[in-house]
Amino acid sequence: MDGYELNIIDYLKKPFSFERFCKAYFRAEEMYILKKTAGNNDLSEKPNDFVFIKSDKKSIKVNISSIIYIEGLGDYIKIYLNDKKLVTNLSMKKIENLLPETLFHRIHKSYIISLDKIESIEGNMLKINNIKLPIGNSYRQNFMTRIKHFIVE
Image (cartoon, rainbow, N blue to C red):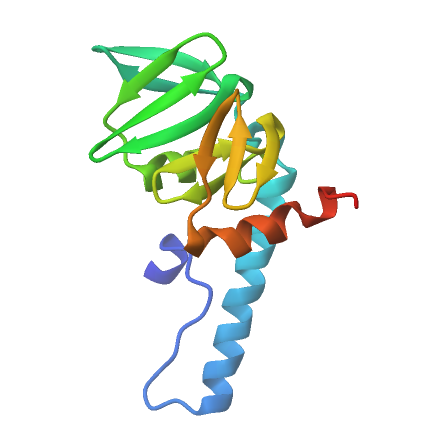
């Protein structure tokens, strides 16, 4: 009875066979996929068009579409927007996880860029908002794979 209150999917009683383990695993995987798919169809769970960033002792609403690029500065990041810059004490990993991966890409340990704001790419540099940013060697292949279907030769 306690299991129903905890929303269990299955249970294994020792000793159990590999076949029984697989059955429990696949049941759990099926439930995970169903929940994930159901969550994607829920309109209330759609990603926001904005985030609130703490900067200068206030929470500032930032429209995702206004972010040009983000620069890592040790324990801080600088967010370059269309009309201003914000400095906050988020990590690059944290902001990377907050941003929609369809719109942003990390090109360097210190830079995350908005894909639709790229002006040009030349060698290991890209130009965004008239600023040249480096593409890190360990990020280059992933970045080029990401944008290859946009390149027309």
